[in-house]
Length: 373
Image 1 (tube, rainbow, N blue to C red):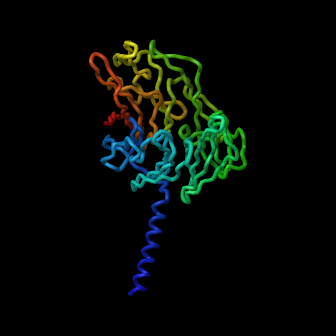
Image 2: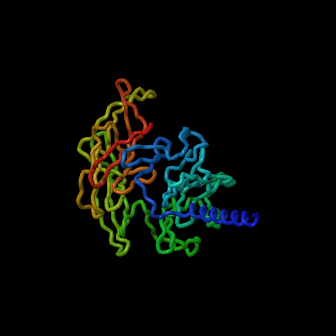
Image 3: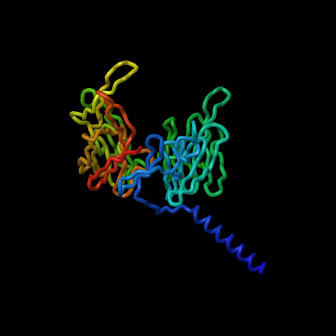
């Protein structure tokens, strides 16, 4: 009897270990019908089928405003890998590297700094790369590049000397890691941060699609309707195979969103929607509020052709923010999410309310504005 019970316990332990190991595997094919965005300090899940929003934090009683919430103090650029969301968080400054499983709802702290602040995190394969900054004896900020093995939780220091600027992992391709620094430098290394090649340029996945990568360049001009002037940009496309560079959009008034086979952007308008006046208590001034982007969202192919108006929010009481997209997973399937500013009546004036999300189908143009409490 004791022997049978011992065998049962051993089998159960093996089963649990297998199950545990399986839970930790990344489902690279994981998809859902949701867009994820941090709005008004809370990380939300937006369902594209029914247009509803709910905090990603699984605790229904959580107010999401203190360290008991797993997403409190979350930095605005989470990284999505399969069913996992990786992000930096902390009450005042990011001190934790965290992971949340979208399928199981499991939350983990993968790393905690004992001093300083974490920044510029990205994930490649089973490793997370990020910077840890601290003040040196002279009061200057120094950065150390670290690599976390996600499975073993072991951490290695990749830079042999303190850096004056953070190193950011742009992308990985053909066994190489491509880096970019705040000083404007590009270079590549292998996975262990050896064999550095200065000037080897990589491209952000957020500005890439298929065999193309895109850059956004200022034209040097300031344009737009009176009272709504904005800098102008052009969009350039590079073929990764041939190196050919083309200007695909001559002029836009925002940073675009590259999604699937499309480019989404705002254009200069002859007139812009007027929403009302905001009263400034400090100066007694009345400030006119307009949607500088014109309230209209445009879309075209990756070669700049087949431009069309995708949707118009002119009469919604909302305005687009400076860029197209959100801080999170901006799209899923045919749907993309765009952060909006909202305004509400305040006596004879208006005041800015909580931000909302525009969920729009890039094939049909059907859209819905989802507001959060």
